[in-house]
Length: 506
Image (tube, rainbow, N blue to C red):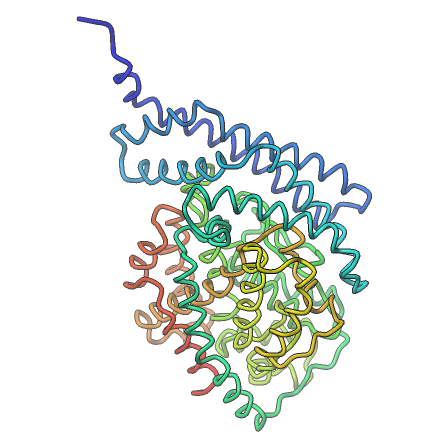
């Protein structure tokens, strides 16, 4: 017999275990990066930012060097030819996806983007309250320039538009022409629906809660609602930040909120929203969390969890009836805190300035506006200096809201652009649509769903999400995941029917 051939070595079944070791190491690096980033946004004193930014940039380079190690290419090739089971084959597919994205970006760009995003976001925290758009401009120009450079590299390789290339980092498989179709559908019926609902609600008086509501009381209420929703406090915590978010890792999920003593619902609904994100992270399959297959399928699916909790469940009359005793226990017994009035408050439609405070009906208009602006930015159709005027025009057209001169409540309000998080905004409205489709499926299986929720039984929702979304992580591509879970790929009609039923039929 002759010596073993190179082909035999390439087919060695040891390739997959070697890949597991590499991606487990990457998971540990991401763990440290996630916790340091959470601390930077929630707890770190201001003078620590430059050193933290340098440290995070160094970690990003280390992660990039690890995943672009030339030996990974041959290991992936070998694993794809090896006799793997279905889960292992899906795992290699997700490893390949992450490897391909990373190998297109030079370490220099990865490091520079990390530093630029950290610096811009940190400066934004003080520049936004000061309404100082001109001060933000230099840092934001750098962030957008680097995003364009990344987009060009990805687009040239994948044969897509530059914006689509960035969007696919967050929504793998979504095409701009499909997004255009979805948004055109929504823009076709949403303005008329908003008008009808506002006309209807004009004859439905609502009592405004009278504060102040002590921050500690609001926090205690939020913690009780988190417990009701199944948040695992042995694997996470609640803190404060400028912009509410969910971060950390599945083993240690950190959610944040912000409080106003004159508006407890802002914090409460924010907590419910972030708890949806957290439950997803906490219930991802623990045996796979160290691998790409064990992560959220897309960020739209991640947003669908927060919106299943906040919009589908949290703003519904049955759930509000369930938590009314907790609200009154912590905040008092004034008439505005009765269940029926809380339901009216949580479904009040009123076009406003702030996306994160927007009602369920006008929220998609906020998202579409941002998508259109950032797409034009990345495609080079506009420059950073053009953002305020375009923002003012689109806010007036879509929501009849005047934002002229109000940068802090206009184009400076979101953290995404200062961080360099371009292509994420579509995930919010896609998530709302996924969530509506989930709940339509759950209702078909559990006709008495509202009665169960009002009685405190949330299991029809959480058990369905556990079985169909949380436990599946990234095993399936998004179209397959949705078809397996609901019997259909994404259908905008479920979202429209949900809104029409909640706001016009009730």
